[in-house]
Image (cartoon, rainbow, N blue to C red; front, side, top):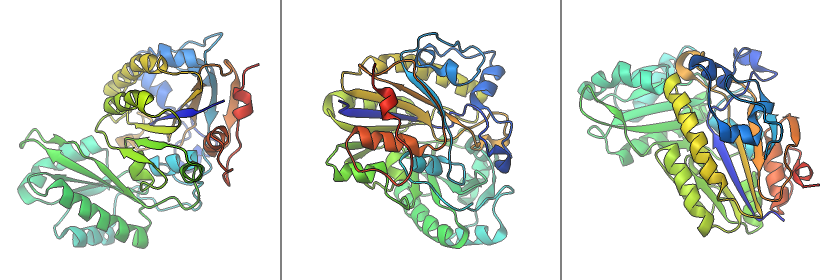
Length: 385
């Protein structure tokens, strides 16, 4: 009997273009393969042991004959590509509608609206990665006090302000106001607030990133498991992405290392229920992302050692982040599905799951919650024998 489920969601962990990737201009996307090529191969023995080599061909990754986990690939039915869409569908909420896109950055009308909220002229307002936006606009920001604004080209708006200009609490309040205004007028569903620190010439992202988003439009696994009396913990940006809805507790962290450490400490404190951990491992800098992914793999080995009978660990992603794509924007890709736990089946090929909602449906069935409107459970395939 499964008593506790640990869900690891690694941001940008793509394993190849999805069936509809051409609609998003991502028909050749493959985050892990291109990341591996750029650094001469990846060394990920822990993920190999779970069956990653069976999911996709990636330089440096072997296909283990007898993996200790079950494996497959997951697609997305929701329209759009970002963490909000990905996490919601994993939880069983499939987003309808194409949503707004901003491939050239924001229009003058949107810029004017943002400036009205902030009461200052903004800097940037174009398609960019976080690091590039900081490089391009940090000096002007410190001299003018104008917020740095950039987009991922889709439904997320990023805002960065130095702590010497506004305290983080003031930035968060303005970001909340911006999200409400931008959603109604232009369909921007998430606003991310980034506090900045450091002197001129050495400005960097500080702690305290916050994601402000609306609530899911239908019931999620968090809702139904809350009704079933389960303990539900969100670590990282999970709480922000669901507006805190359904969670027993939400833990904010600044790095994926802190998220994994926090989750490790919870093994003794949370004997049942669901722990969802968001891990921002893959970023815009290729070499740094490869190194971080390999560091994650090393730490994962110790994390797997904490599993006890009754535990189920599920690892997946929310979208891709192909390093060959300009500005490190999210890409429309399949993500891996890697599953393990004591006394569970091993080496089972779960094939290609049509929707990430299959994960949420499996989780609610395992923890005896009511069925979700979307997704097909694969729980039977995880049973040994």
